[in-house]
Amino acid sequence: MAERSAQPEVDEASDGQEVEAAAQTPMVEPAMRQALNEVAIDGTAGGFAAVLHHAIYGGFLLVALLNYGQVATGREGGEEQH
Image (cartoon, rainbow, N blue to C red; front, side, top):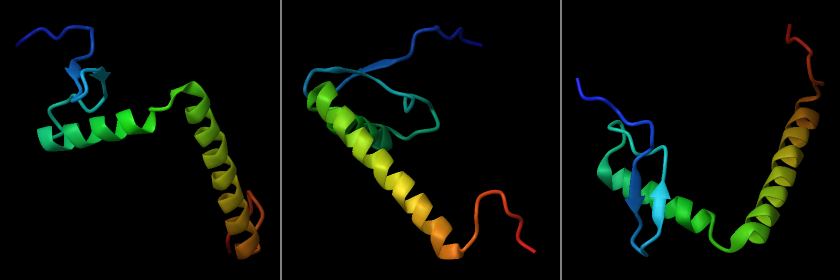
C-alpha cells in the first residue's frame, strides 16, 4: 500500500494560480474537479472585502429565509409536532 503524504495535493489553475481543494480525491471525477476549481476561484476573486461583503449579505438572506419559514408554519423553535 502506498504511503500518503500529509500535504494536500495542489493543482495549478488555468490562470497559473495554485489551487488546494478538498475535491482532490479519487471520489471526484477529473471533469468535476475542474468545475469545482473554477467555482472556487470565481467565488474568492475580488479580495477579502468583496468576499466578506458577499458572506454578510448571504448570511442575512439565510437568517431571513429561516425566520420566514418559521413564521409561515406558525411554529416556534423547539416545538414538537403532534
